[in-house]
Length: 281
Length: 119
Image (cartoon, chains in turn red, blue):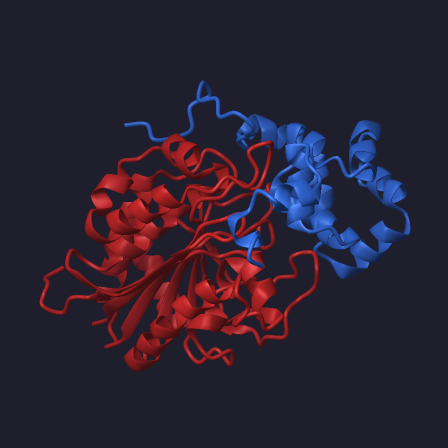
């Protein structure tokens, strides 16, 4: 059977990709962000996972409002990069794992989750702004992308993401092969990108969230979208995606690393958690 | 328990992309989406108004884009993620877009950022 060995929650942002591409890792503004990924990368390398299941959101690159899925699962053998409107970055296509993806599709649907199944799933900064800090950019580990609507209301609830994580755990554990999986959720933290409230950041709430998601995910799963938007800005509602990562890990976890900084218009959060092997699922 | 956005939850300076707002901004957003194609970006840059007219935008919507009025586009149902495709095409940054929506210059906005002081 498959096993979920750990999880990573991370912000995603075009600004991260921008700083990375300009080699600003040592820049005083950006070092507090990039330094956080170093121990997480070291841990992930040591784990040698067979697959990364990534819960993220697309930003109007793969999907448009003509038909907008609440949940979407990529099943392709490769996932090309999306052109977000300013050209592609010099990376190869992401590798997928169709066999595992289809298993997850069957398991989720049997579990009453009904994602749109995508044989073509181009990937934007929701994954690609952070993956270069987490793995080699030859993309040695297959990625199973799960996109969630956090843009056009009505959105799935925080409670729904809680259940998605549990369903992903059941999916991995019912796989016929002995694989080791890391679940990554990307999004947030506090930010608002539109209106007169543009640029609002709430470090106090972000740090409380990082604590809660690790130790008490039930509490954040009870929050409404309005709770998230009031505390962290309209676009921070992406934070609900982290809940799926956390509940996929089971009850007991060990913190590998936590990092936070908020230099400009968003709180950049990072949290890596190892599943506790002694816990029962 | 209903955890969704409540229509009576008013957040100042915020335009939640509800179904109603998304329908209002559909044509504008669809035109923006077309700019993920490099050929369309070139066509847009060659004749912005003509490109938008061919994509079915109203004269009001075209005027908002031509004067880079991101605040007005937002009120008209524009999604920030789609408006950013116009910004990327014409070479404006998210920070410039944001400052305009706040009614500030970029310099005024950057002065409010904690990380900017020691940058």
